Length: 303
Image 1 (cartoon, helix red, strand yellow):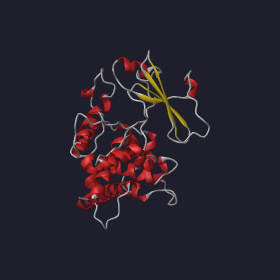
Image 2 (cartoon, one colour; image 1 turned 30 degrees about the vertical axis):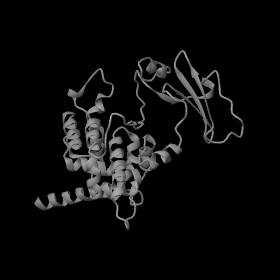
Image 3 (cartoon, one colour; image 1 turned 30 degrees about the horizontal axis):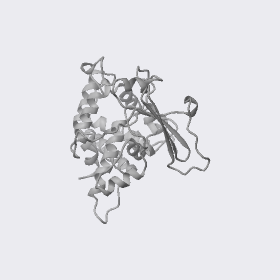
Image 4 (cartoon, helix red, strand yellow; image 1 turned 90 degrees about the vertical axis):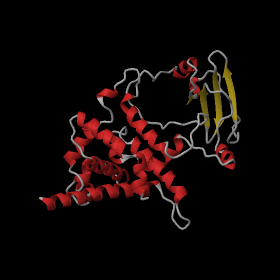
């Protein structure tokens, strides 16, 4: 199986067709080929960075990017970027704040669940997504309110926001921690020495913080551990470029790249070099943009 086929196991034709249908309702006529070209431009721009998006289409050969400018015109790219949709009007649900991305996430989850063993006892961590909008969930006392409904939440807190502080020796070794429990609210206040002191407020039971040691202990029993950090760390190198104008589009591309790399690693031959995230990103963008140019040549020949 090629690297692009691995990527498309997660960013599948079902997801692409849904995006195309949702965008057509918004007045954007786009084909699967054009959507692939658009994704290829996003991926290439993430590893071939410019000061602004217009420089990719500059006439100056010292600045422009021929692979991008020859694959799609700047005006067409801007049109797709402004009208591309990930939800349909029929998906609207006033009760659910995440309805605009819920259907896409469900399709993506179905793709992920092809690979793995799942149980009600397993814990699944979420990816942290930047959000600058307004929502009722952004509230200073959110952690306490969640606890009232039996929900668990953990978050960091600054020292000046807590009345009773933990005091450590100046040369306390890394991993040293102290715990306080507030009976009225049910909050745990945990302070840990890492490179510097980190304080955490949590409604979760238990006091000992998770350390890198945990991954090693789990590995001894043949268990694997991961979380938001792994995906964010894998994709952090190329989460720039044209994405930065609206990072909301790109989480599905990031997750598809990250999962394809993870799936590729156990399948590699002994003499084969380990696949890197940025290499898979290059391969997918190269394939999508090359296919776009070949399709253009075929259409010109028919004319």
